[in-house]
Length: 513
Image (cartoon, rainbow, N blue to C red; front, side, top):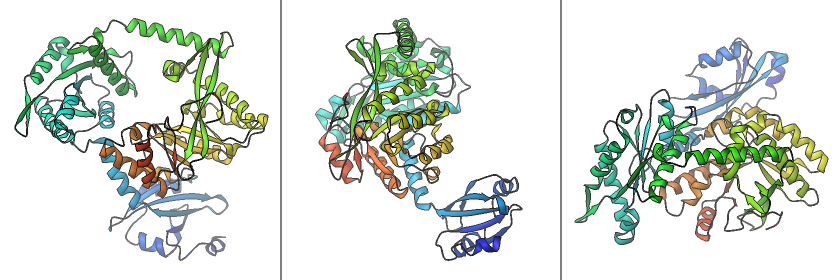
């Protein structure tokens, strides 16, 4: 039987193809595979997978010439043989390496950025942690009076001052004129917060930065949070603790304070009260016990080459009385309570009602919780109920740490005719070589990247790399948050195929532009 298989294998295929039996012996390799493996053995873990008759596996090999190949395998059960084929992913890996640098470091100051901060905080999850946000209040004035070149030099010199001041801690540039001091072992927890913040404030305020003969003052505002401010410390704690520090910074600005600790804010009780109110509203809405309903709003996604509307993204809204509430009011409560899966089903039903009498195409956002709770069957049944072709529906899955564990579920969606889009694709969790084996149709570039593309050269480079890799993977890139003509022209020149944002239309309650 193996000999019969050999007749169909491409001897002169430029990519490597092999047959391997369950003892780990190579029965056949074409010329490309022979050239690649002549000085390489199969990795021990791969041989172990083979002997255990694992249904499928993949592995990477780096050759002496620095080329990198990704191999995929499928078990041919009736012959106790694996068909293994490979791809040259060297170019993808090089772009991924460059993108990973851009993802984790600020090219101008060479300080680590928000993504690296989250990673470092998770590495120290068992320790106390303190975050101090430093807002450079004088940046707008410096940029407007002396120009952006001087402003950039100012930030570079400031980063050096911060490194020198906080040698025992880590310094990050979060974005724009916001820096972070991260105390990974909680030394600052042992002292009075106000005294600690006052010392930082006085020290920075007493310094100046000399550029082109001018002494430019350092004017700052500080926000402080510690891990004890959180109810629990889990994998989401870096983002949550940072939000607490940002809340403290915002409150300091409102109160015209130089610094503020989150624990000193007086409206936390009001925040908890608001969460309880929304939990009650959501449960009442699901049970039809409230004068309100969930309604979809639609934002068009435009083809950049034709100018025509390609499809619409369905966005969740809750209507109570005459007021429309956006997800920032209720989504965190819905996710934390687990009721998001119920809201998603209501959204699907409402969207399909609006699709049944036309030929419009729509994207619907799903969470990992939706996917894991069998939403596919619900979608398939609703398509039948409303006589909607599954090819008109794109499933948008958020790119987070759970996304790459959903490969089998994604394949099932594709087998049922649905299109797949990765939402908020950026740099935090991106695994480009893993995407080779996933049937993705669209890559939706994170809106925060698109928003900053006209003013931040590093963001421009990140988007350019994402577009290049998208095309290598034969996925269609979509830019969201396209808010003006300048951004639209930039992303078109970069080769982004589709756009979405207020430049074209805000979300509207009907399937029309």
